[in-house]
Image (cartoon, helix red, strand yellow):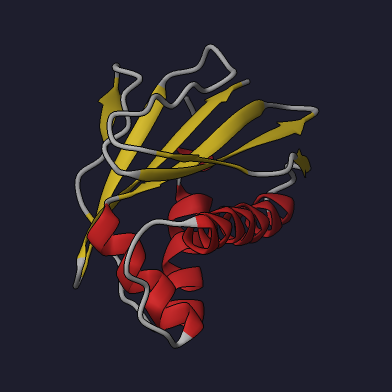
Length: 154
């Protein structure tokens, strides 16, 4: 997978969280993810299709991380992963992919985005719909961790 397909998502997630949740996210060392199991408790996933590549983005949050982010975004204390938290995960996923889509456009790539889906539960699976390798980038915030998974095939 071309590294050009990873960086726009990293830039976008850091921007979305800084702007919408006043939260600084620090990336850690990326790795190739082999297993399907999520590393978090709630995941937003979205597909992207273009004339040069197809792929998907998944953002999976640990419970402490997403509760902090949602609390910051909504200005109220989120206590548990519920429907409103799931809606926020879907919206974060949409905003991140939209921000990445803008960066891709500047590099000559055009993508259409699907509607994001949200998966809740410990040990759930993330299934990317392409045969490309899955690059996983761990992030740390003040309240915990989350993971960005990018999977593209050209």
